[in-house]
Amino acid sequence: MKQQRLGRTELLVTPMAYAGVVSMNETPATAAAFVDHAVANGINYFDIAPSYGNAEEHTGPALRRHRDRIYLACKSSERSAIGMKRELLASLRRLRTDYFDVYQLHALSTQEDLDILFGEGGGMETIAWARQEGLIRFVGCSLHSEEIGLEACRRYDFDTILFPMNWALGLNCSWGRRIAEVCRASDKGLLAMKTLAWRLWREGEPRVYPKSWCRPIFDNDRLALLAMKYGFQMGAQILIPPGNFDSSNLMWKLLEEAQKPLTDEEFSYLRHEAGAVRDEMIFTPGI
Image 1 (cartoon, rainbow, N blue to C red):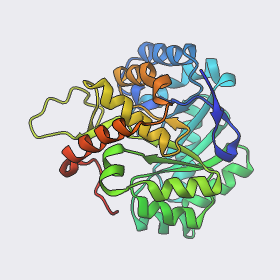
Image 2: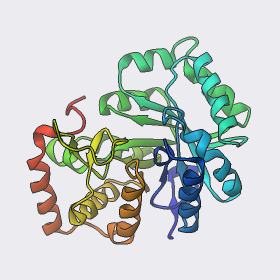
Image 3: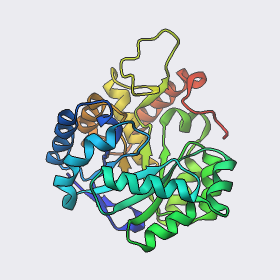
Image 4: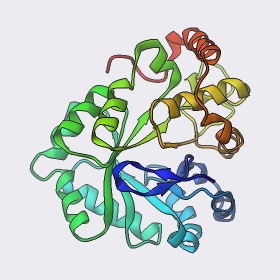
């Protein structure tokens, strides 16, 4: 699989990641099989978090076998220095590694998140300590708000940004364009999540993939392909698939074609589909 540079980290990464949530609530044997399958297919970037239930425990033994051939990214939802240090050390232990290639502040959404993280006794103190100790190589953040993400980038020069580069949000209200520009201007690695998210689940709708809090595209290959193209066109070097094995396989199947630019006709189709879910988008526009 073709590799590309993840911004200024200079990590040569595959354009699709292994999403650690895929391993959540699976048996250790199944989780190991998923990891081995991903590595066998050339995927070298693995993204996981302690908030993904038992995913770290079930994934760690398999990852250890491949550690010298992969990049491992983890996250922390803790905001205090004490809490983040405890979570970081626990993740290192469960994932059976001495360091993370990328460590991310997880799901930044509110001004309070930033005030605690960057205040006295906040998590950024642990980030500085861990980097000095060699426990993390690069620092990133994952975002659930564009405005908070932009403010976070003003406060700290992150190496990577993990953002919902979702076609419906982008085409309906330009969500994500300013984050994409920040990444281009400062050579940050850009990872796109929620590219294969369609809309919110509807009341009474069968939740085919219960680990996904929003409805992934699983029954429209053309829309899935164009949604992936949109993520790459916004500047992403890596796409993160939804948290189920079927979606990972779908993304893998479409990956080569998805790296080609959107045509005018494809863009029109995508815009039409975005309009159809304007009132069901996965995040609230303007925040």
